Length: 314
Image (cartoon, rainbow, N blue to C red; front, side, top):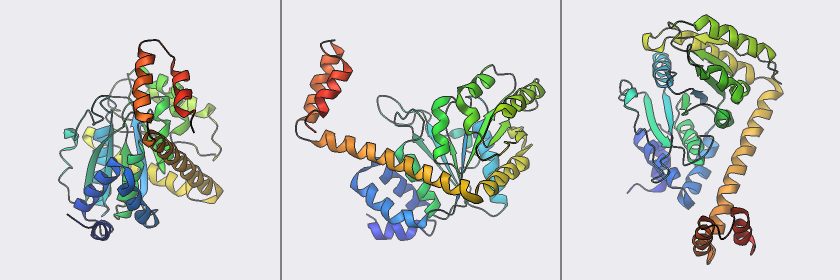
């Protein structure tokens, strides 16, 4: 078994096996994960983190595939974290290892990992945030986080990404609905994928109209990039738009405030997890939880009273 110090040393040289092992450690959580992240954290802050979200069927995986290959052609190493919906029973990723990305899975400069949401509404668990930091410390130049689904919950992606890319497609009724659900607030770059379809101009005009009404504190005007990922069209423009925003937000006080907001969110997430873990470890709490959950299921109690009963001894 690889010793802790050996794992850290190999990881920071970019060894992919060590990266995979480290991500498995943070997925399990606990003291080992905390110790690992304490040592890795000072070595982070060099990678560009790109979040990609959008409607199911928008072609996010194909887009991420082509964008990753674009970066490798520039001599860069790319880490990809695919956030899959969790099974409510096993906690595992439902979609598995993303066979759709099989074309790039064996590329020497691309690392792909599927992770489950663990039931987090935003689709990004604490383990995912740590996995991004691990890839950063392992000298990956770009880290792409692809989330599942679309809607208000997906706003969480902005808390870990330097640049958030929202993928839409023409001809799908939920495009504008998705924007209404809060995606407008997080998109730094908007992509209309499958732009060879009918209705692309209408979608672009609707998006432009909505963007003109949106107010961003940083005064950035998100670009709209048409792409056909399956034909590798528009990928250069997308990479340029991502780079443009990354350069824009790295200047001035906005960058400091954004980094502080991300750090505060991470602290709150960790604090919430640690407090809950500590509470459940207390004598009798696990048994009390079982008894109270049965009482709620049988309508002998309500969830609010049950929670008050659990935290009462604190």
